Amino acid sequence: MSAPRELLPTATPARTRAAVWRILRPHRGPATAALGLLVVATSVGLLTQPLLGWVVDLVAGRRPAAELTTPVTLLVLVGAAQGVLTAYGLVLVSRLGETALADLRERFVERVLALPLERVERAGSGDLTARVTRDVAQVAEAVRSALPALARSLLSIGLTLVAMALLDWRFLVAALLAVPVQLHTARWYVRNAVPLYAAQRVATGEQQQHLLDAIGGAPTVRAYRAEAEHLDRVTRRSRAAVDLTMRGVRLVLRFYSRLHIAEYVGLAAVLAAGVWLVSDGAASVGTATAAALYFHNLFGPVNTALALLDDAQSANASLSRLVGVADEATRESARIGREHSGVTVRDLGHAYEPGRPVLHRVDLDIKPGERVALVGASGAGKTTLAKLIAGIHEPTTGTVEVPAGIAMVTQEVHVFAGPLADDLRLARPRATDDDLRAALATVDALAWVEALPDGLATVVGEGGHRLTGAQRQQLALARLVLADPPAAVLDEATAEAGSSGARVLERAIESAIDGRTALIVAHRLTQAASADHVVVMEDGRVVERGSHDDLRAAGGRYATHWAAWTDHRPEDAEKGSPPAEAAR
Image 1 (cartoon, rainbow, N blue to C red):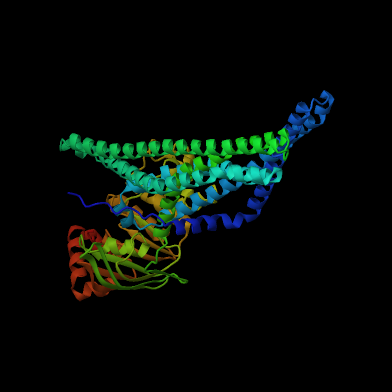
Image 2: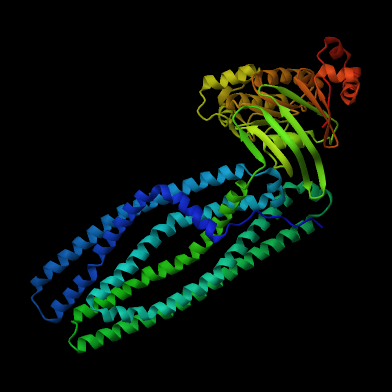
């Protein structure tokens, strides 16, 4: 039975509110302007009911038809002014929302890319995929539709209640009889909706994880004839997600039913107050009509505001999951930034699983501009140490001091779908074509790139021109040159190339790391021989360190690796540029 997934965290309500305020704080000016315009627009619109009451009084008093000209003209002007002001106010609100949404997206993507790889693996790609797609879309939809509607609704409610009080305070008291029912309904809904939507998001993430596992491992599933088992798992997860969705639908239906009761209570009270006040001569029929129209016009804003609780709770659940990822990425790290380009590792230990360490108290110093090669047998811990220094993983114990902007090139290079120039510009977005060509020339790749059907514009990656393993590595090294970091980690960057391709890549690596601090996980001992220092690892520990010549003369483990390598490559031994293979 597989171990349960450790899902990425969900932020607390306080953390979510703090994150929203941090995003909105720089936009206080536009927010104030948008709010002011909507207040003016709503206030102008509230003149409609008194004008209609004026018309009612004129008709009830059998006044001449000519007297209707003034209120009718004013009604037209009020409608036009409200429309213009509301449109402009909503434009400002939408612009504010889209700006804040773009900021949220950028922060989220930035933090996601900073997540330690093992943390993503523990959570499963389905959880992260659900947050990147469904949760981001949910928040975006709320910002685009709910935010403007909510702003207008709340303003309409507040200003309409003020207008009713100006007509007669007793109309306001009658209208407020609906409030206890509405507040009780809102509290009941929030109490039930918050955990329901949170559970729905988790269920959706688990459903996507099982789908990804089944589709990604389809060949293995078919090979073991496990289709029925995986289908059953996906079905159960899908059913759980559907059940939670239907619970949400039933909750919303009950929510609206309770709101209708509040509308009936409030309207009946306002009409009763109108009859009483007109009978006592305290108000005219037109005033009572205006009060009834005011309350009737509250139906839309109140129901909209309360109904938006559904979108708000759903969006809040999604936003909490996005903020939770951001918090996870910014937790205290054992990596310490430093100004110069050297690397210092102290008492470093790491375990992928509790109680099973793969690194033990490793100490390492790399001076600025120095090249250090890691050598060792498969499972010695070289790649783990390299990834800890590069920041791919967070260490279990100890500290890593590295320069800002350290980069890593591995043997598994991803080529992004699209023009080759766009792929290179991921490392330096503003690079010119001349910059790209210079980087490619540095790693001996310009000739074959210019020979492609469309040169730099050739589409590569999925569905595009296929690149060889050596070409992909050269592309990655060209990105390194363009990014121009002070330090670089290369994890067996020549492992996938043949003998001739490896020599080309070795020259490319030499050029790419020229002038940089470099840690090289050496697949070929030619890289170790040309390094300033060699560090030999075994069983997660550093067992030897020194220069290539000193370690050969010492007759230890490195000398054994070297002898095994050169026995199969006597031409390299004669050249004195030893390529020794330190298996991973």
